[in-house]
Image (cartoon, rainbow, N blue to C red; front, top):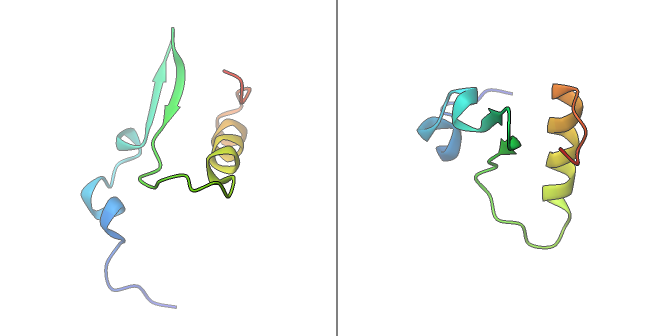
Length: 59
């Protein structure tokens, strides 16, 4: 599989710091660039990010 160009959200914000903010007082904020439409995508992304960072999803 080849990709000619990254998807628009990734092209506009290619760095990890554009998507994840870690605050010592407010926890972790993750931006997905997509809208939740009731399929549970936000919960799935929350769990994946928390697992990768080694933090509780409740943080």
